[in-house]
Length: 588
Image (cartoon, rainbow, N blue to C red; front, side, top):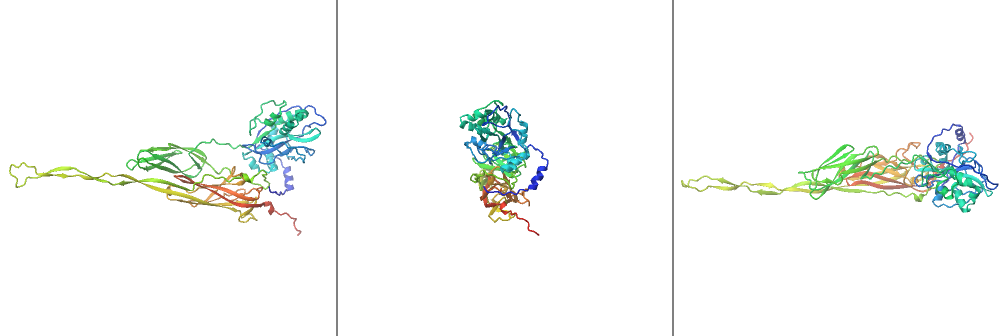
C-alpha cells in the first residue's frame, strides 16, 4: 500500500471546532443493551467505570467481512495498556482468526465527539437511545470514514455496515489489558475460566450485554436471553458484544425470470417463431405483439408447409425500470412459439462511483481479487426470411363440344345423316403452386476501446499516470447489417473498474456519435473541477496495471443482441501527492 501524504490546515480545523454541529441520523442502529452491578474487585483484578470504548469495523453488508482495519474509539487515554489482542473484529474471529496477545503499544482514537456511556453498571445505565443516536450521526460516521480511510459515500452506499464491539480496559492479575467481549470470552477459555472467576460481572455480564442485536444480521442472531444475568463464553462468542449500523440497505428487487432484458430508453427487437400449416399469400399469417398497451402488427408472414418463420417487431423501451409482459397473437394458419413474452427493463445509470477524496484509504484492497469479468459476447447474427413466388404449371383442360353442320347440295332429299363435328373448346389452366426462396440476412459488431490519461494530469504520459488523477475513455463501435429495418445500432456501453473489483459501481457511457459507427465516452464528471469526461483513480490504488472493463451492448437483431467485451489499461506509478511541493516563500 502506498504512503499518502496529507496536508493539515490547522486554521481550518480550529474554525470548524468553533462551528455548531448539527446531528443528522444517517444509519439505522441494530443495537440493544443490558447489564447491571459489578460487585467488588481486588487490588490486582478490577475495572473502573468509564474505562471503556468501542471497536468499529467497516464490513460488507452481505458477508460481514472486514474491508478496512478496525479502530478503537474511547474517551479515555489508555496509554498504560500492557497487553491487548490487536485490532481483530468479531467476524474475523468467526472466520477462524486466532486470539494473539500483543505487548506493543495499544493504539486508540479519542473522537472529536465524545462517546456516550457504553457499559451499564450500578452507578449508571447506558442509554440505548444515545448509543444509537451517536453511531448513526452523520458527523460521527464521517469521522469514522476518515479514521478508517474509506470514503463516507462508500460506507453509506448500502453495500457496507459498521460492526460495533464494546471494549473494556481492565487490570487482570495486576496487568493492564484491553479486550472486546469476544476476546474476553476466548481468553477465558484459554485461562481455564480464570478471567470469569476474577472479573465475572464485567467480562460475562456487563461487557457482553453492553451491545447485542435487536434483529438477526450478518449471520448473528438477535439476543433473546436475559439482559442482566451472567452468560457463557459460547453465548458471548456467538451472539453478544456487538451492534450493527446499516445504511440504506440495497433492496434486492424481486427477481422475475424474463425472456429478455432490455435497457431503458433503447430501441430493441422482440422475436417469436411461427409454425404450423402453410402460410402463403392465399392464406397469410398475421402476428400481433401487444406491448405496453400498443399493438405492433406484422402482416404477410409466409413459410412453406412443415417449416417456420421468425417474426419480430422493433420498439422503444420506456425510460423507467419495469417488468413488461408482451402478448403475442396469430391470425391465419400456425401458432407462435410463445404466446406471452416477459421482459425486464433495467437502468444502468444508477450506480456511478462516489467522489474519491485525497485521504481515502483501502488497506484491505487485493489486486489479485480484481478479476475482469467476461460477459456473454455475440459479434455476429444471421436470420432468414421466406419469400414466396408462384411456380406456373399450365395444364390443358378439354371441353369437347358438338358443332352441327348443314346438309350439302349433294344430299338427297331424305338424307338423315348428321352433319357436324366435335370441337375441343378447352383451355389451359395454371395449376401451379407457391414456391419459397429462403433469403438470408446477417449483422456483425466489432469495437475498439482506448483508455487514455487525462490531459489535466500534469505528469502523465500517454500510458502512465499517478493515482488520484483521471483517465478518459473512447469506445468506437463498427456495426454492419444487410437488413437495417431488422437491426438497431449499438446503443449502450458501461465501464467497470478494478478498485470496486469490477462490481458495486460502474459508469454508463454517453453516446457521442449515433449509428452503426457509434462512439462512446465517459459522461461529464461533476466532481471534476473542469467538468471533464473523466474517471478518477483512487489515491490508494497500488502501482501497476490499471485495467478498465467495458461492455458494449444493445445492438439488436432478430437473432438476439450483439455485444462485445472490451478492456484497456494504463500504468499507475506513484500518486498525486508526489506532484505537491511545499516550500517557504522567498523574500521579496
